[in-house]
Amino acid sequence: MAKKKTQQPKSPALRYIFDRYVAGKPKRLAAVERERLNLDIACKIYELRTAANLSQRELAKRVKTSASNICRLEDADYQGHSLSMLRRIAAALGQRIEIQFVPLGRKTAQA
Image (cartoon, rainbow, N blue to C red; front, side, top):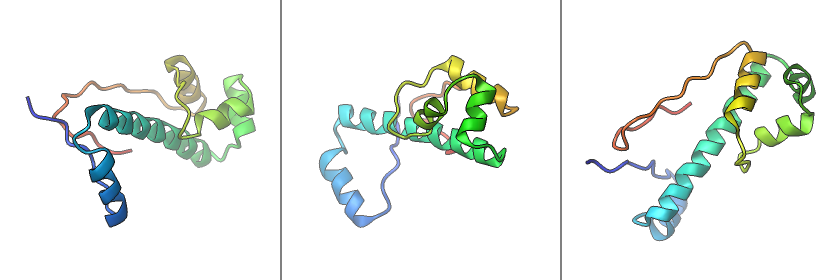
């Protein structure tokens, strides 16, 4: 089975840090991938909300939650994304969620 190819940093300094502290270390690679997914979700929520010209407060009202919850969901460090909340946000923004399972060796498209 082919190994999953992890995206390498472009900056020489970040590449050095990645090579020294992450590359070849499965637990650290997995942590980097988890954080990258959290970042992708946070960015997508922000992009969809701003494209709809909504404030966090306005989106929260549509989703029936608090603005602080929307703020947390747009934070790349947040790890508590629930599928039900993501569905509510998608519906409020006229979107739907698609989930894909891809083989580990296949590179996924970036959002």
